[in-house]
Structures are given as structure tokens and as C-alpha cells.
Image (cartoon, rainbow, N blue to C red; front, side, top):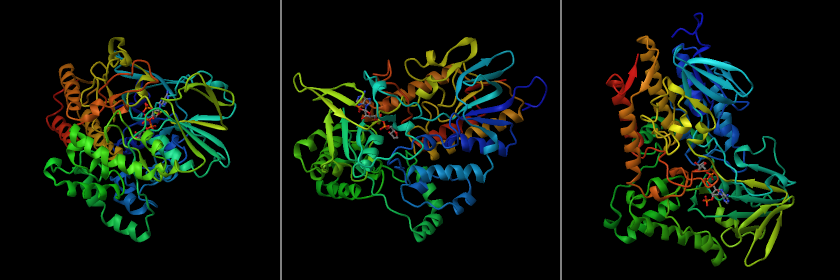
Length: 545
Ligand code: NA7
């Protein structure tokens, strides 16, 4: 790599994004002495954890399974305060990592990337920034996140609202005074559920605008004492070894017993234990066939429905909170702390958008219609849009990637993303999509997935440098095969039926009202094996010159 010679590009490598993935990739490349810079839209590092400052934002992964595993010193010096840490603590952690490894000097903040264009004669990428600057590099790496393209609904009058309104991703950085305020939350996904549970006892009135309920389960968060932390620290090897074995890179892996072969009483006892245990066990540590077999799924869904009925005082309201269009775990399970109990409070009300549709936003609040020809104006001081993301491909679509022969990535991916192993795209040489669509890190505990992906990309960079390679491009046929494989894997799981971001569904984005194949469902261990096979065989599915 020779970025310092005359007529060389500005950098050997540019990484877009200074979140969990970009931070680690930067660290690995600096170890190799590569000339690299990170372009980050935010005013600081942290990505997801920099932006999402909404009330109640926290991990659903055990904190100690989410931290980086690559440095023993880092593991030794960082104490987590809760089993599922809140956003401020996670952001502090990532800032600490950046300081600890002296990374900030290689990051440029406030850099929104508008366009990336491949230039074949010079074998470089040109990156055009929103502020008018352009930078060039040989190799471009995207670390632009999975859920980093927030989407707003398009209700009439949204811009006329006179109070404070924001998408959860853009929650104000300065503290918001919720005391006594009339607050609306639109959306009941994992984010809305956290916001609602957190704000219920802190606001004057809270109205929740729900289109479809989700199956939620208790998080059972608790503090970590110094003794707990010492024990966790001693167990780090075991924690990461366990995460490495599970399909999702979490501490929780599926129970492979066949549900029908387990006596009913034992099933229920197991489910009670899961319901009363912390974290994603109830989803990812459940019988495997709960997520694959309709009947098993229906039985478990009824178990959870009864829990919801027990927790909500008003039986009619409880029924509105029980999903009827999909079973448990088919969509992302929101983890909650007293979420259902929030609806037993006098100041919390559900507005079921199926009965009383949202007509428009007014200067004072939200107008709903029905039943019949009635309309009701709900007045608010604050409207919070917890309306989700244009997941996984959205961040790519918001940058104009132009590859070889002027091919636009948004055109190539118009139906569904097409990649090889989720790391590269035919027609887009020297572009590496770290944690990109169809990569194995998308459906996992993110840091576990990205550590594997970044380590693999780093080995590739070493190979490129050692062999004087200037152009790397995934071949067309392996790409087509991988894309078919990713699609086929959806067939095994009930999540193929989900109207959620797992299947690329988003009612607020044109053309995203149908299934797209965004995530690799073959499990993290298998994905790592496939990456290793590719590199050990000398990258046979890439053209390198
Ligand atoms: P989600 O899970 O996509 O949830 C978005 C929510 O917003 C969901 O309840 C939607 O209802 C609702 N929504 C979206 N648009 C509208 C409109 N136009 N009208 C009414 N309701 C609407 O996003 P989250 O931010 O909660 O979670 C994303 C991930 O972040 C999560 O999985 C974690 O990994 C972290 P719908 O269900 O589509 O009927």
C-alpha cells in the first residue's frame, strides 16, 4: 500500500462509520500501519449508541457479552454497572475504547457521505462529502450500521406540530423535561416498548399509538456488584467461548429437544424458567422448533399470551396487546421492564390505530378518526416517533454508490441485496461491506459478529498488501449462489412470514412492503467457517489483480 507516493489517493483505506464496527476495524488497520481515516456523520464516535439517546434505551444483550473481546487489558479495566447497560454507559464504553487505543486522531466527525464513485483508470474510490469536500482511497470499507437509517411516517401535518417531536434515533442530546408533560409515542417495536416503559411514571399523560402489538418478554435487568464483576471478569473466556457456539453470538443458544417429545408439564416448567430469567433466553434459548414449526410456535405464543393477560388489569386492553398476525419470536422480541404494567396506570392510554386511525398531526397534537364519523384531537407537548428503520440496506441507499461502468448500487439492490458472503459486491471493486446486507453479523449479537467480520477483512488487507494487489472484486457466480443460499435459508424459519425489518418490511419506504432477504440465517459459527474457507483457499471467489 502506497498512499504517500505522488498521485496516490488521499488514503489507502477509508472507513465510513465510527460505530462498534468502524472503531474495531480502525484499530486493526492501525496495527498493520495502514494509512486509514474514518468518516463519521456524528460529532463523536459510537454510531447507534451515539445517536439513540431516547429514554429507556439499553442493551438486550448481556453487557459483558456485548463488549469487545479482543483486548484482555480492556476487559480487565472496564466495569459494567448493570447486566443490561443503558445507552449512556455503552456510549461511555465506546468513547473509552477510542481513547484507550488512541483512535480519535484517525476519525473525522461531522462528515456526511453523499456519494462514493469508483474510478477504474486510477483504481480508486472518490468519496464526496456533504460539506463539499472529496477524498480518495484505494479501498473503501462501510461500517454504516444496520439500523442507522431511521424512517418517519408521512402523516399530513407533521411539520405543523408546535410542541417537541423527534424520531427516537434523533432524540435530543440535551435532557428533555418530561415532568407533567403530555406525551405521544407512535410505534410499539423494541424501541417504543423501551420508551413507553421508561416514561410511564415520569410524564403527565402518555398515549401510545399502536398499529400492531409485539410479543414482549421481561428483561430482568439488575445491577452488577463489584463481586459480580470480578466473577464476570474471571469468566470472560467462557462467556466468549459460549457466544462463539450459539447461532446468534449470544449467551443463549437453542434447546435442541423436540417440543412434542417433552412432556407438557416439563415444557411449561421450562417456559416458566425462561420467562423468569434475564435476557433473550426466552427467544433464543427456547425449543428450536418454536421458531420453525407453526404448531410449536402457536403453543408457546399462547403461553406468553396468558402472561400478558395476567399482567394487564383490563381484559379487553390485554387482548389488544396480544399479536394475532404473527407468533412469538417471528419478529424481533422487545425486551421490557414493567411494560405491560405501564398500561395499568391511570395516566397511560392505548390508542388502537386499527379502531381509530391516525388522520393527521395538528399544531396541538394528533387527530384520530372513528369509530364512525367521529374525530378526536389528542393534545400533546411531545410526540415521539418510534417508527423504526429502513433496515440494513437503508444506510446504503442514503449514499449514492456508483461502481464499475457507472452501475448504481441502489439499482443492483432494488429488489433485494446481492452480495458475496455479505462482504463484497460484484461490480463494486475494492469496496468491503463490513457487516453489510446478508453478512453473518446482521442477525447476531453485533460485536461478536463484527469481530469475526473485521478480523477476516483485516487478513484480506494483509493479503492485499503482501501481494501488491490493487483490485479486488467478488466474482459474479459465487455472488449469485450466495444470494440464493441466503434466500433459501429464510425458508427454514417462521420469520420468513414476518412483516418486520428481518424481512426488509417498512411501510414508510416505497417498495419495501414486500419480503427482501437481508440477513444470513445459517448461524454465526457456520458463517465464520465460510469466511475461513474462503481465505484459507486463497480467495478463489474473488478476482484479484
Ligand atoms: P421496529 O421494530 O421496526 O418498530 C417500529 C414500530 O413503529 C412498529 O410498531 C410499527 O408498526 C410502528 N410504525 C411504523 N410506521 C408506522 C406508521 N406509519 N403508523 C403507525 N405505526 C407505525 O423499530 P424499532 O425502532 O422499535 O426497533 C428496531 C430495532 O432497534 C430493534 O429490532 C432492535 O434491534 C433495536 P408495525 O409493526 O409496522 O405495524
